[in-house]
Length: 421
Ligand SMILES: Cc1ncc(C[n+]2csc(CCOP(=O)(O)OP(=O)(O)O)c2C)c(N)n1
Ligand SMILES: [Mg+2]
View 1: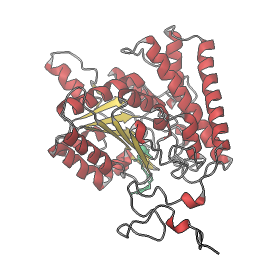
View 2: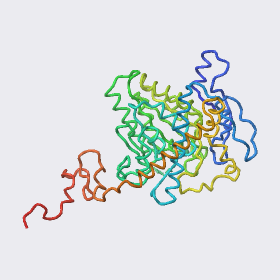
View 3: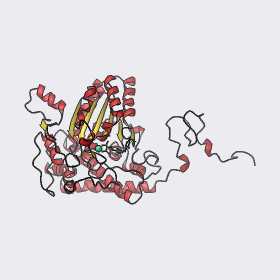
View 4: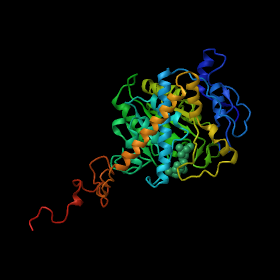
């Protein structure tokens, strides 16, 4: 697509300050046949230049640009977290093949820098809502790889007591309020949480904000538009983050969206949008930081579009046959981790041994998480309905909301218990 704007806000700022070239100057963002943004194009987008001509399949991955803004230790920490999520997701795919995991399972492979950039921008006191592609977010939010893996295994030590599975990571203490399997299901409660914050707090630098993550396909759900309108008129402290991985299952953004430049989708509601390169955790963090701060200080809702790339199928059972042969041949080029690692080595922040140690530690941590999950007990079938509702309503299969409240376990008393024979 020609003439895509990388970051309209920055561009405007730069223009008003008389800068000759905004960081987000007009650029060309190439799309592969399936519509996913190519690594080349994304690198070009960050550099504000035209994408170089197509390289032949199997060419060396492009060197990541020199990243600025974060200190050395932070950049190494980003790599550590990305390596952990990478390892976790690869092993989760493997565990699915071995039938240790059932149900749906969507991986963040290729989206690690996006996840890490977003999660490092979020304060522990901010609130997070995501879609079903949530493992990396739960890990980066500090919910523990072991408890996240136990959730995938459906075990009682899982973050949702083994009752939620892959799509329903949840931990109120970390203010991660889900993991939603229904496309767009997270948007109304996230907007409601932002409304609640306006009733509880005054705007300011210490106020809390909400991040609502979703995919590109989700922007075509009605709730997205209703929520944007509400957020605009009530001035809610929320950032809607759109992970643009080019695809909603097998459908490209261009085929699905009347306005495929998704950061612009708030314009009917006067909600500003920005687009950022999802292969650069530092750029993602900076953009998310700024937008969250605008939300907390000025009650300015925003849209952050993160250009990312899904290295595998939609879920672990999707062979992604809709990808062209050329795209499959070039898949490795879209992997954001090797260039980031190479850049850290080139900048002298890591040597080969240290990088391998980080990867080895991630492998060990995930192996331990698998062992933890494997040894965690299955939840008792009798607890199946105990957590259906958060409040004191009958959590029993045969009762409906509105029926009289009975004490938990009322239907599990053995007949005649407590009576004299
Ligand atoms: C209301 C609803 N409609 C359809 C589905 C089936 N579905 C699951 S994921 C998905 C695609 C969503 O794509 P996107 O928002 O781009 O997220 P991504 O999977 O790329 O992270 C669809 C249509 C669903 N879960 N919920
Ligand atoms: Mg998508």
